[in-house]
Amino acid sequence: MTSPPASKRPRTTDASSSSTDPPYKLHYWPTLPGRGEPIRLCFEATKTPYEDVTNRGAGMSALKSLISPTPTTAKNNNNNPPHFAPPVLEHGDLTISQLPNILLYLGPKLSLAGGPSDANAIHHINQLALTALDGFLTEAHETHHPISISSFYEDQKPAALARARDYTANRLPKFLAYFENVLKSESSGGGEWLYGGRMTYADLVLWQGLDGVSFAFPEKVRGLREGREYGGVWGLYERVKGLEAVEGYLGSERRLRYGKGIWRYYEELDGGVGE
Image 1 (tube, rainbow, N blue to C red):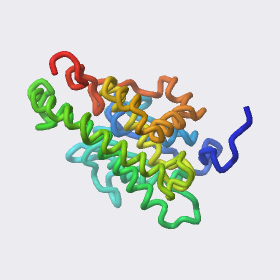
Image 2: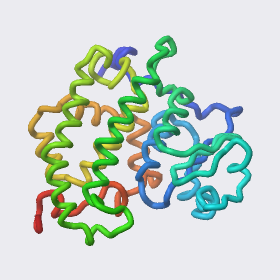
Image 3: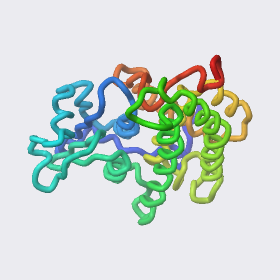
Image 4: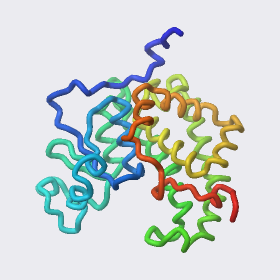
């Protein structure tokens, strides 16, 4: 099989050879992918070394010190405000939180923010990433916690059933249709990636969202895929999944398994028994 032309290959940077850049340290809740996963994917897809501190390093103690009401670490002093919740990224003297903010920071550094000649690329890519986070992360989470984040799923099950029905019947197809249109637009640069003819962090955010909802709603998503209305979106999903670096990551112990986090599987929410 011949190699695809250079214009069709995902353009990424292998940062593993850099010895001058300070290490990246990611802090997120242990054992669950959640909002930390798009960040991990950015590192993994570009072969950028990073430390998943909570899962591979200092455990919860480092994370708690960053998000406690009275933080004591030096990283939270001076120009670094306290953090409300993870994910938190450390890079040299900088510590920042909020997933979209971290992606906005990492995108240019990891060559995941469009071409160097496109000054507006970062804003378009951020728009796409924020939309994917709305549709496949925030709204997916609200299917099992539609009333109160502090309450158990079982305490709001009737509302969750109603929210999940609306999400899978209306909201999920609407977001899929939007991204299908994005891939058909001129700004996509060929229909393989969301923007500019090259892989960006928006593609990785979308991939994680699609993978998460595929876990949470396997029957509903299977039906949407079989309908073939969103072939471009699922083509992008398979394209990212097939990247050598991503494929290796997904098969490794670094990839955390889904559980009782943002993307949860409840049979009744997927149209099964008890609906």
